[in-house]
Amino acid sequence: MKRKLVRSIMAAGLAAAMAVTAVGCGDKQNNEEDKGGSDNQSEESDGADDSNEDVGEPNGDYEACTLTISWWGGDDRHMPTQEAIKAFQKEYPGIKIENTYAAWDGWEEKMATAFVAGTAQDVNQVNWNWINQYDKNGEAFLDLNDYAEQIDMSQFDSSYLEMCQIAGTQAAMPVSMTGRIFYWDKTSFDEVGIEVPKSYADLLAAGKAFAEYDDSYYPLALAEYDRTMLMVYYLESKYGDDWVVDGELQYDQAKVEEGLKFIQELEDNHVTPKISKLAGDGAASLDQNQNWIDGHYAGIFEWDSSAGKFAKALEEGREIVVGDYFSDWGEHKGGFAKVSMGWAINAKTEHPKEAAMLVNFLLNNEAAAEILGSSRGIPASKSALAKAGSVEGLLDPLTVEANGKVLAWCSNELDPMFEDSRLKNSDGVYYDVMAGLSYGDYDISEAAATLIDGINSVIQ
Image 1: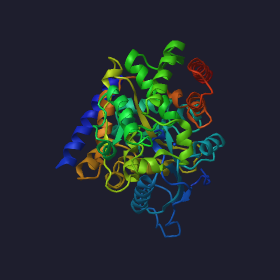
Image 2: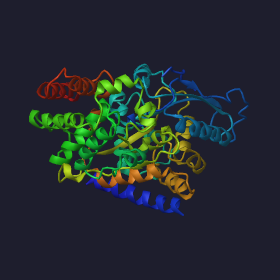
Image 3: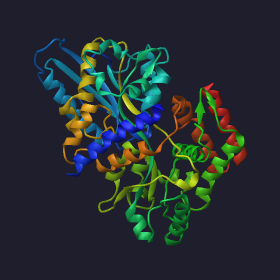
Image 4: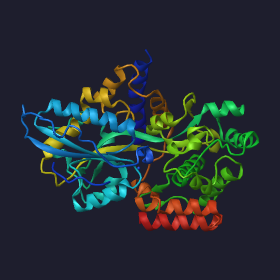
């Protein structure tokens, strides 16, 4: 019932936005959707380009201080975030912000150490699963309930807030909701001479058509984690059960084997390249892969909040479109939506009030909403969504369309442990199983058993 409520509320907000758009304190750390936050910047940067400027004296009920903030993303996120932070500094003279930001690759591993040691930045962009993974006792992140005077929580639906709670604390504030969906390079499909897929049967037919056109072209590119996500969507669409419930995997050996056979079928039918082919491309992420950029890979299964970076990566003249979910997988609407990311405050910050003011500004301030747009997805804040939706062209149309489809379709609940780093990271269980299956190191039965054992070892 709660999931239906979340979808109905977000759908109403998105409809309004679409209608309008149609007419310190911590030390800097050298630190990826939600891979949805993965990006095209490869180095960590200190973005405090105005750190030597005179930020003035406080003109309100707060202290002069220096705050640090961290986030990951691409240039489409880095640039507006820096501009929003400059706007905050003008709004609150006396508070200086030092920025640390980078690509997703390697980011979580370095931030994990900082969270455990308490040396993370004062304000941190966090993945949803980080709350469960790094703040189990409610001691790593500040309880934002204690700063309700600084953060306007009335702008958020209670179900969104609940997703960011643990151990009786409000560990983070939700930025946006997200889910996985297909994106297609329509230009490639036009070149091959077929329509973008509307069903799984269409996708299999596309694999044959692409191979006949040029066997270096594929209708869909799926890395290891993408394959896991798509397999779960497939199984949930067929059987309807959530992947994990109350710490127990709901799919047995036979059903997991069925899911892995589905993934293998994609390779066998020239729908997606083998993992060895993707590895040989030498790209850190799909948006940086030349085969995506020039249309040799004509589809992805990605977070709706990633639309901007994938579209911008394409060669000039190529057209990316949002796909549809496939109804011929089963009678259920498989898949899930989740909090894509949040803002959390280091529990050891020396300036919690001022840090909370910064979080509120980035989430709810109208000027910030106009600057940030959909750089972190469609805003969950009612005030930010209303402002962003009132400015023509501010919200990325692809993101709006994709997010609307995600929230209208996905009906399953996501267990936070699904994204545990021991499962989803490049040395995790998902990667081992999907790469092992693709390389032939595992047969279907071995891969299923390895996946089940690995998941159980983490969630139990």
